[in-house]
Structure formats: C-alpha cells, structure tokens
Image 1 (cartoon, one colour):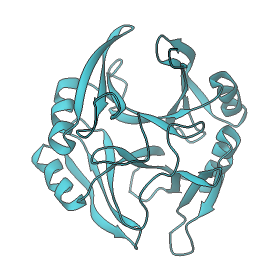
Image 2 (cartoon, rainbow, N blue to C red):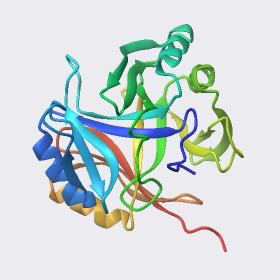
Image 3 (cartoon, rainbow, N blue to C red):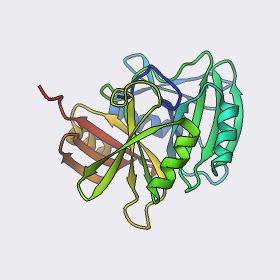
Image 4 (cartoon, rainbow, N blue to C red):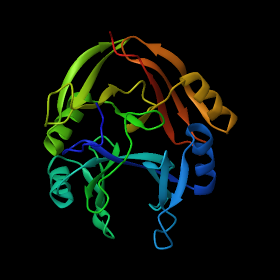
Length: 260
C-alpha cells in the first residue's frame, strides 16, 4: 500500500509541469478540491497542491526545452547522486543531474532505457507527500512500457524493487513493491504492457476518489478529456483515465472495499 512512510524506491513526491499554472490549478481544484499554495517568490512559479491542509502534489511551469505537460512521479532515495550513477550503469539517462532545492531536499530526473521519465527525491526539510492512499490523493503509480521484463530488470538494479505477476483481463499485470517490508504491505504500483505502438512509455499516477463517475464528469465539465471511461475491474475497483486541458494524463481509482 502506498503510504507516507517512505523507504527507498517508494513514491514520495509527484508534480505536474503545465504551460499555464493558474489554469492547471483551477482545473485540479474543480476536479479534486485541491488548493494551490505558492512556494514563494524565489520558487520560479512552483507551488503545492493541498487537500485538507496537507500536500498532495506539486505544480510548476514547464522548464525543460521541448517538454510536454505531464505528471512526474518521484521515488525516494537516500542518495540522489548514487541513484544517478545506478541509472546510467543500468542503461538509463540522466535528464537533469542531482541538485539541491534550497533546504527542502535534493532531486534528479531520469529517463529509463525505453523512454519513460521519472525522478527521485532525497528528503531534506521536506520529507515528501503528506497525504497518500486517501481520497483525492495519490494511491498508485503505474508504468506502461513495451518490454516489461527489461523494465523490471532496470528498476530492480536502480531501486531493488520486487515484482509479482497477476492475471488481468487481456494481459499479465506486474505488481511492484519496495525491497523493504512485507511484499503485500510494500506494494505501491504496477507495470502494464503498452497497448499498441502508439502508446508512449510513461508513468501514470492514480488518484483515489470517492466516486469515479462523478469525478470524470467534473473533469469533463472543466475542460478535461476522457481517455478511458470509468469501468469496474474485479478485485481492484472502478477506474478511469483522463487528460487535463493541456493533455497531461492521469487516472482515477475508486478502490474496491476490502473483503470482510
């Protein structure tokens, strides 16, 4: 289960790069009830999405040349510089090298060998997200990739993740967990094979919601696009895929209640 008790390799931060941060803040405020809080005049327009006074994600302007609007999933590391070396040794690319973010922590951005972008956060004053696996907060991180075995080998070398296969409708789905803790308790995400040649390798954040259909309707009414309509997945819940007004994809999940 994805929590805020971060260990090496667990998702501990999430942010959105958008061409119009004011419009993005308005959209996600309408969809999830998030409030945007600026990080200050020296933060270059970066700030935090908050729900119930707790940080659920970050938001900032696009800073990389040629970058498209997208959500970026960050994974916990105790040493961003060592992780950068591991990424290169495993065949990945350093998109931007480790850097200090004032006193908050240290970050770096990478691209895996198949083209999926991700990042790491080495906590300083800011440990990471303050809300996870609750309504309107990150609850799952999912990688869509062409060569699943190669991806698993890469991330195992970088983070030491464990994996377990399960059968899903029309595919074999791989569940991911960190190296620390019991495998079920340490589960935070999964890997799905890309559906067709048109799907680019990418990490997709899932946000837990109380009502997937109502959330889809709010997103559509606020300028979002439905990529996959809400549907029930046995033993998982009701999920949907959306894109915000700028094209950044994300997903919703109304988790199935635990069995009695």
